[in-house]
Image (tube, rainbow, N blue to C red; front, side):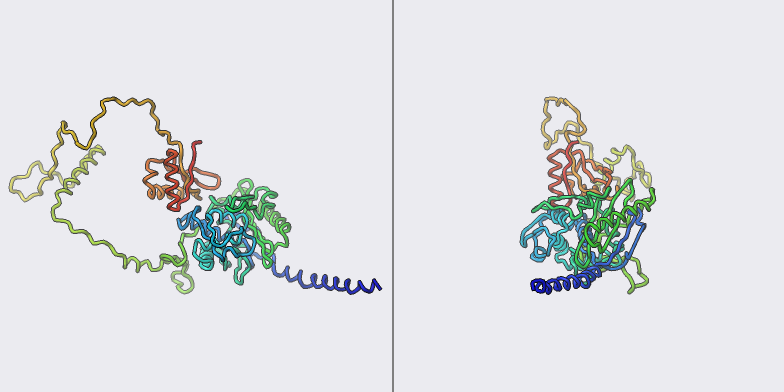
Length: 487
């Protein structure tokens, strides 16, 4: 009788197990199809692909684009790393994984970046998008515009975090392209993707892919992703002996299975890639600014075949036509003061250069009285040597004794204003920064230092006080800056 009583329970368990095997498991497998691509990062050559152009759910691989747009905004002065971001209820209510932000609190932008890159925090990603463009929907439009500019032709973003949403799709090929651009376009930030832990302001966060980073030799990024619809995704990059391989996997069945597959693909890439390859960096897209502000740069396509492939600046001609220019102030026919000033300037230039400026026509030795010729230039008489200027203080009779001559004057400090992908960009930033902050940078030395991951733009030969003041003034202008001490 007891055995008969347990029989319905056994049949119930069997029925449930059968339902699980026949229905739930196949459905979850079908929801996360497998796709992969392996690329030689040095020249963009594809070494392996499987289902690489199928549009699938990218999950948190989306945050690579979120961070790319944020880096672009910081570089172009839209926002600063130390700017405080107020967290909206929309961002605070995002589902996990999250940093734990509360609606109404403020937090520095740099902490949101770390949380999104290392912890893959959804609330941080949404807060970043809202800080840059005002709303997540507007930010998604900018993400899509940037994706097209990068050549990610089969990607559509609907949000900044990557949680499953209808139409939010990408491919293994596009996400590999994204990872390559992150490495080459913003090398100064790339180290974020290899940090095992990071300080995110309100918490210390751990990397979602620390197992891969710690187990695979040469691995240094980039981004994991998981949702039920996407499966376990990963775009990973590794460098060995000057070779860099990027691999992307969509639809892994578990973290361990995904990591093992990516390791296998990276090995395939290193074995297949040639030892020496000419470096061809991906073309960096032009900066187009905020969505809906200023003249927007668009790529003209099917509607204007004659302009296909070209970039058009909208409303530029109208803006020029409507520009209000100040009227030229009327000047009298004769301006003797200006003539005299010009004469003094020309004479000073001749004295400084040590050469006389040749005239278009030789000046006549004398002009007869009553002649209609050009009136000779009136030059002021030299000032007598015994004239004492009232504006100058009396000379100190005590002779000055120089005890030490120094070319630096104790100026052993400097500041860094960023790391850039090439020397030209670094020098350009140095020049622009020097012009923007002449008050504190005047007399400093502009210096570009080559690093393994880019070119540092530095101002050297400063005192500690002047370096600190310059950094604070630059940061107030939303320009990245940190001090460099004596070495």
